[in-house]
Length: 318
Length: 296
Image (tube, rainbow over all chains, first blue to last red; front, side, top):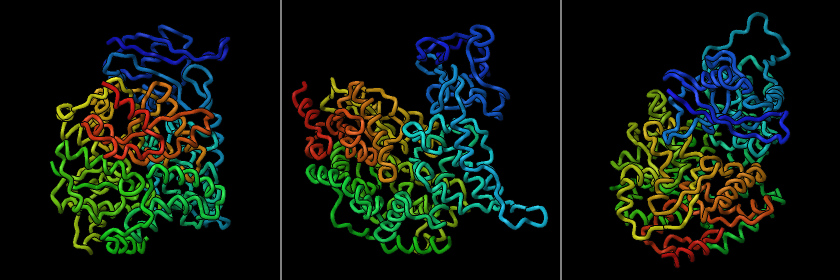
């Protein structure tokens, strides 16, 4: 079958340094992958097309790129699954949120420096175990999903926070931080969690689930970030806007069954955060003038008591 | 068609206009809403309670589902965040019988049990799937021809696709565009349609949050949108409430009204804008409404 590709090209040696799209047409079979198509283009049509690839089996993580606008591995994406129904070509772009070196090749340096920043190795305590340290099976089963990460960068490519802020550690590094933080053989939690509690750490994730959606290995980075938030709060780091928000949120639910939207932002920013409190004033005035604001008096739901009992029961088991 | 109605916290709190518009629209579309059935149902946790205690949040959602089962009615929500959080909870509860049994143990104290039969549905999906786009079209008295709307799904009604059953219902990925076209308006395509509005980090990282607002609203505005339409009241709160901050950050005017899905439908059904509190938005809808008033 004839397949049309529209590939983003960028040549660092060009005079204008602007990327452009180039169309290719190749003959492929029903079972071909996007990577097969790109390799065929490079070998038979245009030897200047640059891309990274190696294993062709979703193991090495080299060929992450945007396919029709969404990150994925070219080697485990079948062409028939991504041909647009309206007859338009398959759009191929380099992975996002990383600088493009040439065509579909991106610079992974920012990826690695964030990865390194979370110290992705086991850090045992001062007392060395006498023999082999056998980790409980259930802990390793719990970590199996996150250990599957092949460092392809698909999650980083489509992270909506990295799109606006380079400072964010990002889903891949944070998922890896969880992998070590949750390992029973690692004893560096105090220092690790304190670091992850800093700006650019666990609290900057928006929970948009893009990383969960595009990860080709089921690592679910965002879910790991949420588990890290729980660990950070359980370790007593509660003096961030994120922790205050989660704690205030839970408190309102426990006491009334639903949210008090008038008081929640105040408690999340922190009432002693003068700058933020002043910042809320214009919004308050605008809301008041528009006649659009939550009720001043927050009532309890009719079954607030039953809801509170559930809180008490489940929290006591934690 | 009758549903156990779960309005969510925001429609009863900071977005009363969403609540009013929903009641008006449902009446005309023949969607009967039973609000008593879920009157005492808790907040879904909005993904935030899940950060503190996932089992607790899942138990509260299972309780809501159990109440819906008791009423014998399907569950309808008007909040994408509620939809996403409930769908994810439901996936965990229905995929793992042991987990469900553990949750039901807690619910038993109140004489409740969740059997796993609820499939929570947003009004957007109800219009597109249960009623059908043709039915919506048959009820339209006022085509919004000449107007351009940018669809803003946000995150929770499009991801994770498995919990939201998007593969089984591929139509869900285009439902908002379908509604916009059915009411006679033009869809404005823009890159951020299914990205994050920035609401979850609005107190945590205001600059990032407002940059997201600026990017999406400016992209839509510059592509000719008269307004943005969203099925998510949390997206509305950020895109509407913080648009002036975003404009200041981007150092330019934006002035793009952010309207709720039922408000858009309501305009085409001939419902008076004041009845849907369209005059109570922070980014004024005055220009949009006056153009609508004089349009043929």
